[in-house]
Length: 361
Image (spheres, rainbow, N blue to C red):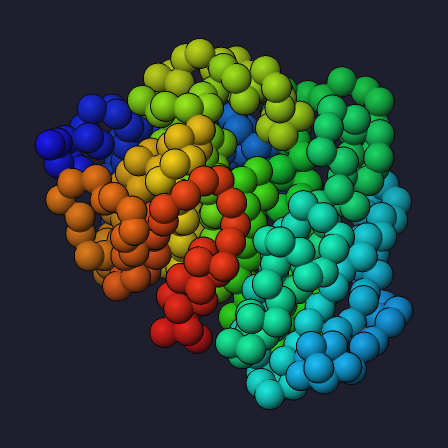
């Protein structure tokens, strides 16, 4: 059985700790290298993120009896005052009354429902966490239509430029604007906000945490191609299919690499590295071969180099060969688990992720 270093060597990944001009990366010049990595990812994958805009949150409804009275639930209209006009979308916030300074999960959701099959709110708040959520479709619809939501404000009906952001970038931007509002309210610890998502929204959450250094942790649940998984040598969904079916998730430039992942000037350990020195968590499912759990784990292993450069452990304990389910690695700054089963964001994932964070908040 091949070792992890052997598997990484086979992938022939681009150098993480070498500057564009060939200078070796040190702890002192890491911020400059991180800026380079983010620039590469914006130019070649997700698109360029606009500057933050002012936000305004208005609580339109409060339920003090949620979860048998244990939780205060606020429905908020969050308005983004962009240079091209305003966009308002709903945010739900659930605060456990037993913890007046609660760390927060910010969940980028597929649906507006609460609770949802991916959002066990009572269990999360019983663990002392607050829970914020928004439906990604209320920010920009999950399709090639750029005439609605943030797409309508920033793109409209014209053709996107090669490096212009796609929908993943818009959803990530919205999550950062939710954090802007969370920083203004009481009853939570706004310095302990973890952004999380599943599948395409796991890609979104990881990209959000990579860019926005205010997030305490970024969680990618079964995000696969375009998210946590290494693209070189990946099985399941690959560059050629994702850019054919979902080109609107990314900047148009990404499609130029369709079928040629070996030509990418990045791989996804770059995204993991950009979260350093903050906490990062990657979750996989054994039977989720489309996402490719092996490539997700290798991304955590390769991204660990940035953490180690900064004097922090990456993913621990170090695994000599590819882990098999069930397994969890919670001793480092990068958390990882692989569970039995299929593509899903379930109770087991949440419990493992909460356990990782409970030891750190």
